Image 1 (cartoon, helix red, strand yellow):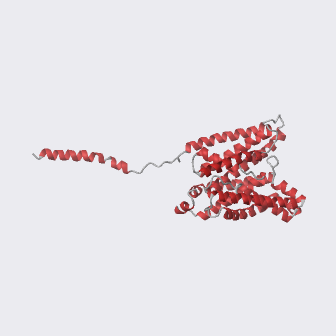
Image 2 (image 1 turned 90 degrees about the vertical axis):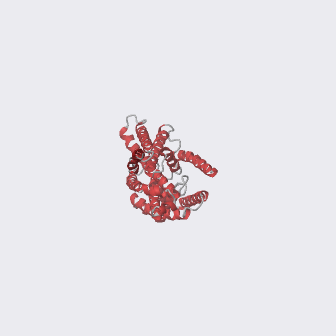
Image 3 (image 1 turned 45 degrees about the vertical axis):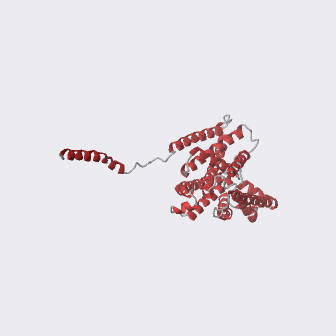
Length: 354
């Protein structure tokens, strides 16, 4: 009488124990995703922008040459190099600065950093005089200006941005006031300085895209390479810094040291771009925010690269159209300021509605 029950019990035990086999599989470690999310999208964007950059460069170099390659090509290559260097410097500086300030509206130019560079350069030439400034090599003058700019920009960051607790509009207002003050002081010194010193200042420090000091261009390329390499090296720390001060400190990041290092990179990059072509106010705002939209990711390794490519395409293609279609009836900086100013106002309005 009890045998069937025992048999059923053994069968039940077997049936019950059978599903236990997959438990080993379930307890095995999950597969690790080696490719970051959105990596395929970033690769497509980078490829498209690289091709667009090469196409715009070919257009700038070859349009309207008409066989005079020995005359046109060297000058156009200098212009192309300046465009790429300035675009990369502004793009990287803006992405890093926006991470530090936790705002996609603020840029170094809007906060007065390029105006600060102009003021520092003006003070150096005004205080040393035209003869001393002429005797100084462009490299030494650039190094002196960049060193002073580095210290002054860190002080400006601490004064304007502070600990990040100020509201957006207060920060923007403080930056605009600081930039206006620096520009006003520079304008006053332009009027009272010796005309020879003024000529030295304009010739050596504030060239245009079509008139580049090749020595300064080479130095700018070297400094840019080092600064961009430093920015990519700290890309993971910037990813953590984007969590905010409390979040970054909570995961063990040395927040103060990272912020100071990031601001040093921003100051050096702003010095490079401003020394080559002067202030370009809204370029960083345009290329950084377009890069964020194209990548769809918060990873700085992707955003830095895409922002550099977007800036290169915008500047090279814009210069080609300005040079060959509009016949220099305007400047590239004015076109960027027009478009960027509208975008900046639109972003402020959008932010206020939140």
